[in-house]
Image (cartoon, rainbow, N blue to C red; front, side):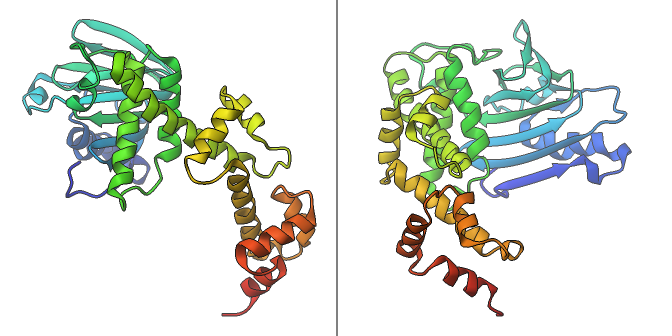
Length: 325
């Protein structure tokens, strides 16, 4: 992808006749956007779905495919692209051959394909995975010594790799294109987590931990608040236990957003309450039922918080939503 192309590209072979699925996926998507070729001989029943987007200088692909063999051929290497292709496997199994290395990739693992050299990455089962295409210098600059990227596994810091996977999953659909600063931060956090998983050390490691790890953990905390806000017992202690950090760390990260843990939870509950109040299918629900559904165990507290946030009562909001336009 380049700066003139769409920020998001979607492709699904399900919309095509079976005979067209493999050649279309190979020619129009894989070769064009990843610099790879497809070598699978048995193309019967082939299927694939892909979504691509660019954030800063990073191309991110979310891909699901039946077994398929991909290759960075000698002729393709002549295109001069020496970027790094990081593959993170969500489900399935894969194998890679590059620069005299031959290794397996299991679900939850990740490795690097160096576009400066020929190589193969073969999906040997139905698989879902992420591909991150990153300019070489973005990662190389975080290592004080030269590193051989071809075939390097993201196994030097398992926690960083897990945070990377979670961060990409949660943030992939966020709209950061409208803010150059947001895109820059998202790109930097991804690079930091990859460098940590590859074993970056020294001052670069300290900087990457401060930027990337904190950002990924904050994203995970906010997701846990979103997921668990309907539970009246949700607390910083509960979230800290789920994520393997301390309650103080949870509070510290959230304070950097300018809002406390309590404020974040209250906002999520009120937003969900508003959605239920405006839902025609929930018109028969009592206000108390909606309050309980979103995590309030005190109706008076719910009414007060709602009025402070929206300047009206829950009944006012429901009536306004039900009124004919």
